Image (tube, rainbow, N blue to C red):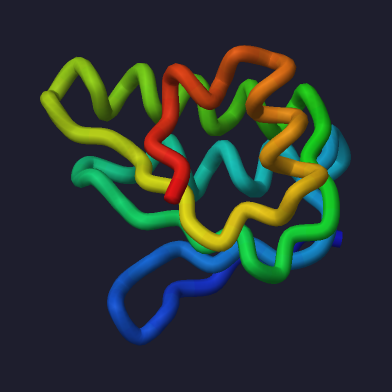
Length: 94
């Protein structure tokens, strides 16, 4: 189950599993963004292609306004998913 919360520095904190069952809930949050955000992956265990699609759609929308998502605390497994999908070229991953 995916939990989405806002941290003390206004970052988006993801925890749990970001899969197709949770994609619509996440889509509502990410597509409502009108400013660049930091997204904390520190408590995220898993991301599916549906989760990647949500992030990509949000990144595309924000980039049209000159803004972007910045991903932090991405664990090794999820970092590999971003690398092998080429998404590490689309997102700033710190």
